[in-house]
Structures are given as structure tokens and as C-alpha cells.
Length: 247
Ligand SMILES: Nc1ncnc2c1ncn2[C@@H]1O[C@H](COP(=O)(O)OP(=O)(O)O)[C@@H](O)[C@H]1O
Ligand SMILES: [Mg+2]
Image 1 (tube, rainbow, N blue to C red):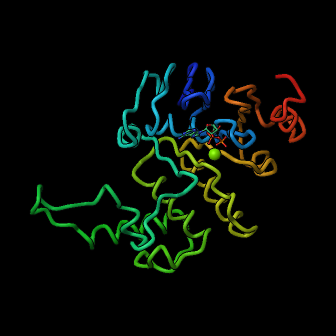
Image 2: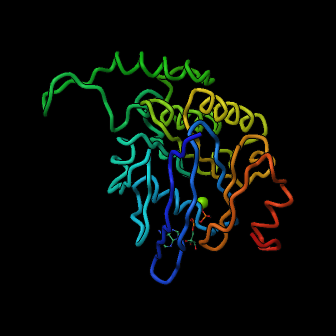
């Protein structure tokens, strides 16, 4: 299988905090790749570098065989990388369809007199939701009325639409109950089955062992190990995270 994304010696410091220290890892097309590590290990910072929110101090990324630097999240999105951040970034007072099309509204005409094509967006939103078999009241529901799992589903749906190549999810089930977690896990598997590569940040080893093909372990800003999931165990991953086992 081909490598879709590679991080090469990515380093980033926030003042004196060295959040990322020469992180190198790769992920393959058509796979779920997990990123694990204790709180503060640098996982979200790496996600923010990949998705154009932070710029690395040193090192960089190769995406689809080309060296890339994403100056903004828009650049990453245009390249085909969509991210569901830990805080989801949905707008509570807008509807599901408005959230799905936030910052990529379909308009007729250009400039200040352009018209939002509400009907088109609603229909497309309904198709996106149906396509992922997401369980929602209607696309006209306001996000504030949805459960945690439904919100996560909207955010994933937003990331999966728009022909993305790579969908990154930062702790997508951390705040969910058991049943909602199952549904989101089904969504993650469906994304892979439909040909998206997925980068899954997770604290849940059981989930990682069940869903992922490859797992990378971060500790104190370093990427300390990578394993094929078929060739490791939850015990080994825990030992790598805590440093009880050398990589
Ligand atoms: N915007 C920021 N400003 C300053 N320090 C930050 C910022 N973001 C993250 N950090 C620090 O970088 C380190 C890695 O954080 P983070 O990537 O959020 O870890 P993880 O997602 O693995 O829990 C932590 O020490 C955190 O406090
Ligand atoms: Mg985090």
C-alpha cells in the first residue's frame, strides 16, 4: 500500500515547551492509523501542524508524494485533509446543514450580491448524512439540540464530505457514552471502507486494537515507536507509552 502522508523530523516549541521533537511517522492510504500517548505528549499539536493551524519550527510533511507546507487550515482542506478537532468547532446556533457548509457555502453569482443556494445545500447535506447512515433528526435541527454523539457525527460528516483524502480525528469518542461510541466507531470504519485514510487520536486502547491497522506512540514530544496492530498488544502499547518498554 502507498504512503499517503509522512511527517519528517517535525519540531515545534511553544516558548520553553518543546511540544514536538523531531517527530517522524507515516500513514498509508486506505488504513486507519492511530496516534496514542499520555496527556501532553504532543498528539494534538501534531494534528494542528498537519491541518495547517500551526507551522512547524523545523521539518515538514510529504503528502501524496509532494513536500507540502500548509499556511492555513484552508490550504490543508484544499489538499484533501479534513480534521475533526477535539473541540469539534461546530456553531451551536446554526443548523446541521449550515454547519456542514460553513465556510464553503454554495452561492450563485459572485461578490456582495451573490445568493446563498439554501435549497441546494440542504439537499446535499441530507445526502451526506444519509450516505454515512448518520442518525439525526433532520438537517434543519440546530446543533445545540443534538446529543454528543450526534454532534460528533455532524463533525465527521463534514470532514468526510467534500472528497477528502485524509480525515483526522482528535479523541472523537472521549466524551461519549458506550452506545454513541459504537456508532462513531462504525462511522470511522465506514470512512476507511469508502477509501478515506483516517488518522485517529485515541486514549482507548481497546478501540485502537479493534479499529486501527497501524499505531504510533508519542511520549513527551517524541514519536517513540510505530507498530502494526496485528503484531502488537495493548500491553505492549501501554508499556511504550509509559516508557516501561524501550522502542
Ligand atoms: N497553544 C499552545 N501554547 C502553549 N503550549 C501549548 C499549546 N498547545 C499545546 N501546548 C503544550 O504542548 C504540549 C503538548 O500538548 P498537546 O499536543 O495538546 O498534547 P496531547 O494532545 O498529546 O495531550 C503540552 O505541554 C501543552 O501544554
Ligand atoms: Mg490532545
